[in-house]
Amino acid sequence: MRLSKLKPRKQIFKIFTKWVKENRHRFKYKPIAFTMQKSHITFRLERTHPSLKFWFDDHEASPVIFDKHGEMIDMIVWNDYYPKRLSTGQYICAMCDEPKIYDTKEQLLYHHPLEGILNAINQLIQTPHAIIVRSDDITYCNLYQTKEQALNKKTDNGVYINILEHGDNL
Image 1: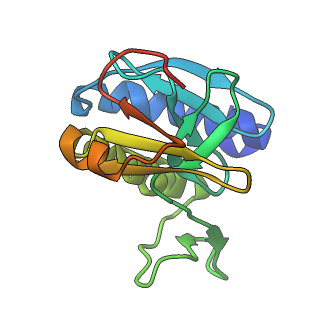
Image 2: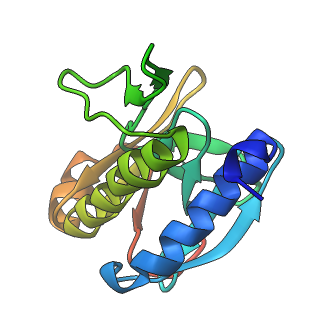
């Protein structure tokens, strides 16, 4: 069956799982715990904090921090994309300043946002210390290269986590 004949979320899941299988060797921490929801896919990385998950849908591929109840706290790195069909039948990401042209939407999804999420994972490995701040109006996450930097910025309503350590203190 051609991917374009699949329902959108199944199409995304098929593209995503193919990409992960073919690129598994490029991950320092292997992707695990894949979940296909109604509108998106989430996954985790082995040996990382369970609150860190990665989100992939029609327009976004981003690392996200969730609390232990499954509530989204913050998208750490915005990796938005927007597939746009050209008059030639080819596709580009409408959010890129200098978009690359792809012959099919499937090719765009395979190469563009998934490479972005791999880059985000590599960035997170370089800045694994996080402070999660919760207040009445807002919850957000800030990343730091060292634990000392993070703890120096911690406030009374902040929680420290190292995303490269398996734990559950959120």
